[in-house]
Length: 156
Image (cartoon, rainbow, N blue to C red):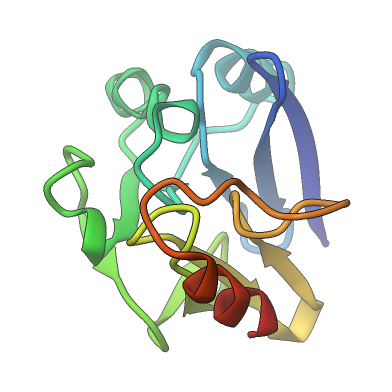
C-alpha cells in the first residue's frame, strides 16, 4: 500500500511524506522545513530513504540539510538546479525514470515558476507531485521563466 501524508508547512506550503508499506521505503517531497517531517516519521516509527525537490526555492528545500543529518537518505533534485541545491546524490531531467519510495516516477520538466522546475509522475498510481507548477486552483507565479514556458508546462 502506498500512503501519502500531506504535512502543512510554513504559511502556505505542503510537504508530502510518502510511505510504501510493501517495500518499506519512505520519501519526502519538497521539505520546506524539517521539524514536522521528523515528528511525523518518529510518530510512525519510520526512517527516511529519499528526499525529492521539485525546484530550488527555500520553501521547498530548507529542510534538506537537517533531514540529511538525521537520516542516511538520498537527495534527488533537478539537474537545472545543480548550482542551487546542495548535497544532491542524483540529478534528474526530462524523461528520466527514478524510483520514488519503491515506485517508478517519470520526471517531467516544467519550467515557468523557475527555470529548472520538475514534476514527478507515478503513472501506475496516477499520482503527480507538481511542486509549484500546478495548484488546486491555478499555478505557481512565474518568477524565473516566461508565461509561455508556464503555459507549455501546464499543457504537459
